[in-house]
Image 1: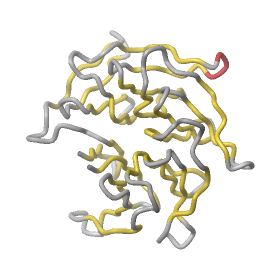
Image 2: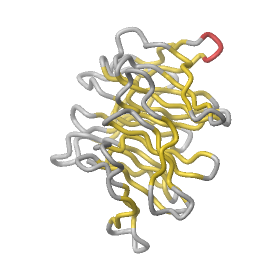
Image 3: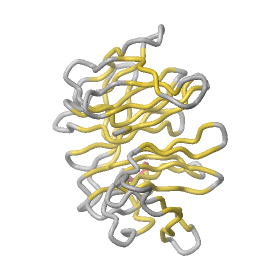
Image 4: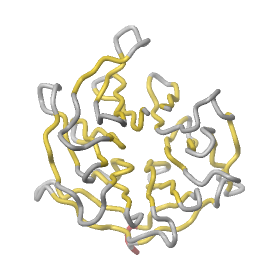
Length: 231
């Protein structure tokens, strides 16, 4: 799986499962080239984000946060595991800070860079055990979940989430989120479909059906004015 995508230094990067490696799309735009080997015991790079002009990765296999080194060829650890949270499913930069969404507990954390540690912002969003994906849209932070496939918006001052859209039919996982052309798009992990959020009806509308045998849209990113999905 290409679990995560991000644009860094004008190139598209992808983080993978089954080895937790980092790849970069080649200059021709038709193949991946490996940038970093597996980061010790971390078997999946579940999330990527660019923060303070550096590329960060969130992992499974310990729920740790890493940063690509200045040379661009190896990872360096920034934060150890955040208590019992073993997955950093989503990363996003919001209001000048780096946020991470987790499992177990479906919580939202914010990086305290001075202390190289996470601080909790929002507790679990009711029955949603996974904060699967994060994206910034209209200057607000949104999350897609597993445990009902719903869309939430963070109310940071109250330290809680507010639901924006219910489950998208049978899609229980909103595995990926991205803001594109002033709309929010969500990719799912129980059918590999692409949806767009309708802010008028407060509901999802399907854009693309399953892409042949690809059952997960594990990641979304905007690159060169186009929306890309990793499967």
